[in-house]
Length: 259
Ligand code: NAD
Image (cartoon, rainbow, N blue to C red; front, side, top):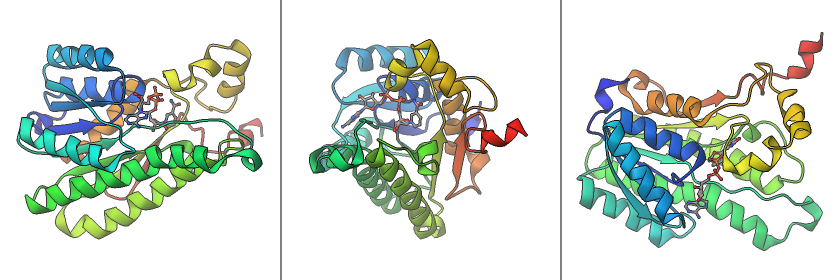
């Protein structure tokens, strides 16, 4: 627990399930004021808001499609109206589709980019504007992936969006460090969430994934939430522009374990 987080205002995008849900719950335990952004799952988001309150925080669910500039602006505006400020933004919302790259339509390319990269950029831009105007030394966390580093065939659009997020984070971290605003990336490995349920529920495919993870276990949203809480807190107040890999060693070339 990080005592400085109590009472701070955080937005978590795409928070109605998976990793975002885990982060919202952890922020609730930290007694933060949490905006649970969701795209379509109103009842899940409202139910989560109740759970965040039960955990000790304050919470509200706000609908917004992060791929729409106007909706992201409104999300930030409503947050400030309701909770009186903004200290932490977690750009977590993300989508992934599978397609051979030579057959990938521009429409499908844009769909992934618009949510994963452009949505995060607009969120960063609006949060930075607010934080600068109000001299808030805030923390922005972008949810990337091990695929900002590991190439991902059949997911060129997804990997490109995450690679872009890495340099977006680093560029913003450098630009706003003089103002005390920190911008970091978390890069999860294989985490058990609805995004990859279809793979992890198949024992053979799950074995294939486990063979890529030196720590030999699938991650959980709460492990990503621990990293998010630390990066949001004052304990990380000298940390900016980093990618924190939370992946059980997946990015460490596990092949070489075989000797
Ligand atoms: P998930 O599919 O369970 O959750 C993604 C969330 O994003 C959902 O709540 C969804 O509604 C929301 N979302 C999608 N489009 C949106 C939009 N236009 N506007 C607002 N919200 C939208 O997936 P997850 O595994 O929890 O993934 C969360 C983040 O972590 C993503 O950015 C993903 O790329 C990243 N990630 C996940 C893993 C993993 O193994 N699960 C690994 C690496 C990175």
